[in-house]
Amino acid sequence: MARFPRGALRGDVTVPGDKSVSHRALILQAFARDAFSIENLNPGRDVLATQRALAALRPSMDPAASADIDCMNSGSTARMVLGACAGANVRARFDGDDSLSRRPMEPVAAQLRAFGARIETTDGHLPLEILGCERVQTRHFILLSPSAQVKSALLFAALFGGVPIDIAGDAGSRDHTERLLRYEGASISWDESHVTFDAAPKLALPIAIPGDFSAAAFFIAGAVITPESEIAVRGVGVNPTRVGLLDALLRMGADIRLENERDVSGEPVADIVARHSRLTGIEIDKKTALRAIDEIPILSVAAAFADGATTIHGVGDLRTKESDRVVAIAELLAAVGIAADVERDSIVVHGGVPKASNVPARAHGDHRIAMAAAMLGTAAGPLDLDDASSAGVSFPEFYSTLERTRES
Image 1 (cartoon, one colour):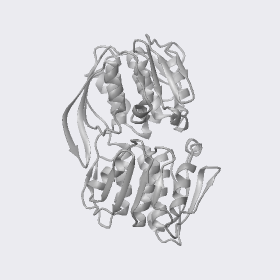
Image 2 (image 1 turned 45 degrees about the vertical axis):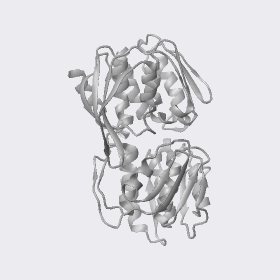
Image 3 (image 1 turned 90 degrees about the vertical axis):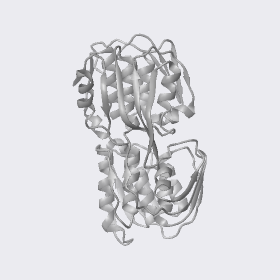
Image 4 (image 1 turned 90 degrees about the horizontal axis):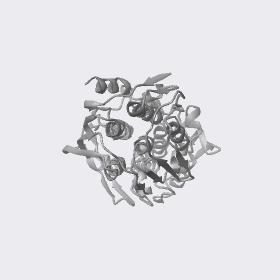
C-alpha cells in the first residue's frame, strides 16, 4: 500500500528518455553495420525487454537458428521486434507475462503475413512463433487501424528485408520511426496518412533521446490541478503526434508554455512550464485522443477538477493496454467521488471537487494508472493506492522525482 498526500509541486524536473524512441533506436542500432551511440535511453523495464530481445536474436540471425524472446510486459517489443524478425527472415518464439499475453497480436501478425512472414499466434495472442520470411510478397499496405506499432513493424520489416514499402491508412499516429529513419539518412516521406520508404539509412549518427512526454505529462497535469504549483520539465520531446494532452489542457484553460524550443536527433524538444489553473470541461475528439492515447489516464484526472463535463472520444484501444484503462480510470475517479460515464469508445468525466475517501484506489498493475493516482493524491489526497510498483515499467525514478518537487 502506498499513500500520496496532498501538496504543491514546485521546481525543475527532468524525466527519463522517451520510451517510444528508445525502442526504435535500439532496433536501428541492431540493424547498423557500424556501432553508434544512444544517449539517454529509457531505463524502464519495457525498454529492457527490447534490449534483451535483440540480444537473444543476435546469435539467431542465421535463418536455420531460432530464438526464445521474453517480451515481459512490453507490447512495443513484441510488435516491433516481430517486424524486424520478418524482414531478417529469422525464426523466433515470442512470449510475455500474463498481462501482455491478453493483448492482441493478430493485427500486427496479419499485416506481417501479407509481407511474407509465416507467423502462428495462440488465438491471436502470445505466445507466437515466427517461422521466417523466405520471400517478400507485399510491399503496399493499408493499415487496418492507425497504429504506430504496426506501422513501425512494417517499416522495420522493410528495413531488415532491404525492400521499399508504402503504407496507407494512417491517421496521424506517432511518427518516431519515420523521424529516426530520416535523421539517419533514409529516403522516407510521411504526410500523416501515407508513408513511403524507399532506401535504407546510413545509420552513422549518434541518437540523443529526448525526455519522455508521457512521463512529463504527469507533472504537467499535476501542477495544473494542484494549488500553488509551478513546474518546469526540462528537455521534453514535443513531437506533434504526441502532445494531444497539451492541446486539450490549453483548451481547458491551463497555464502552460513552451520555452527553449529546439531539435534533437530529428525530434522537436522544449522545456515545458505549467502552473496551477482553473479548468473548464471540453469535448475531445478522436484525433486529439490518438495524440494523447498514453496520457488519457492523467488527462481524465485533470478533467476531474474541471468545471463541467469533459468527454473524451476514441478511447476504445485503452481497453487492451496493460489494464482495461477505461475501467481503471472510472474506478480511480470514483475513489475521490468523481463520476465517469464509460461508453464503448468514449469516457465522460463529470468534473467537480475531488476528495479522497478511506477507500484505496487500485493500480491494476498498470504504470500509467499508478502515476495518475499519485498526481490525483497531490491535489485531492491523501490517496491510498494498493500497489505503486508498476511505475518501474517506464519511469523507475517517478516517486523520488515527485518527492523532490514537493520539497522544493
